[in-house]
Length: 259
Image (cartoon, rainbow, N blue to C red):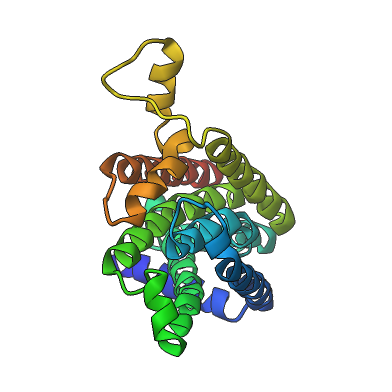
């Protein structure tokens, strides 16, 4: 266990001193802040179904392909390029603990950036209490539900990034592969938005497949539940399965490189 925490500290240190991380975070926060401002200004004239806070959460999820690669692309790709992966694997820490430690560090940094993004509605609420209350920023269920929804997808997205980084010794290739996989994931969610399948009525094979895919195609629909504080366990379980699946195959890849 001590080896795991050492890996977490090592990776967090690497993320905090990386210029690419700060540059990507700056542009990500700036673009999200500008988008949030214009969304709030035009929210009253739209028929958007989600409340503003949940819309910011969804924006964070869909903006993740532009951020996650910078947090995960160096995890194993840089170690392989510098030839230090063999040294890490010779340390008294298992392959899964190594993978889990690097994933934990990326997830922690992602959560830090997500908290900074959530400062936008907090600043609006404290600066303009009446407007903030009318937009629903005073409702704790929206904060809790939205935070859990974002955390679930953050876990799976960073796991995908760690997996992509283990496949190559080139950071740019790892980053582009992560961006591609996450974009495909989110495109599937957006394409199937509004299509619901009842568990009680499985009329076709397609209905059964869509239910098995879980949040891969129903995740965006479930955002409406989290927006009002209703936690959809199937979405969370599906995200956990995706997370551990990619961490597991990453550990197999590292074990293969070890031999």
